[in-house]
Image 1: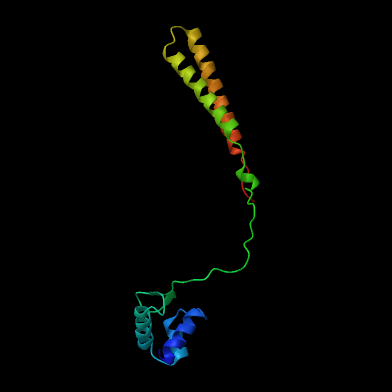
Image 2: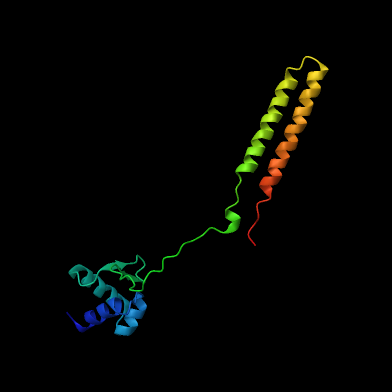
Length: 143
């Protein structure tokens, strides 16, 4: 193995240099010669990695993981994400059901008393629906 090949392996493996231009500057050869050296080292198996399509970088494939200890932490959700929307949604559904019931009664009303009762149900359904929507909109935004 020639001196330039050994220096190239040392630069890639030990110093983590990936730019072909920097490798060429440090080795004192042209970028085309560096690419040829990389191809020959890849074929012999002395160097493992991938040369980019544009020929500007060489990424080694045997990346070492850090020996630093991993810090395990418990992530808690921010308070604005733990808003319980179930009561608001139930209130909205009840309002829609009452509103629908009033509309059905109004569609089949035979006299004015049934129409008045349907109007009261429609109004009550709208009020409950608006109250549920208001409660749902009270969710705090992040500050």
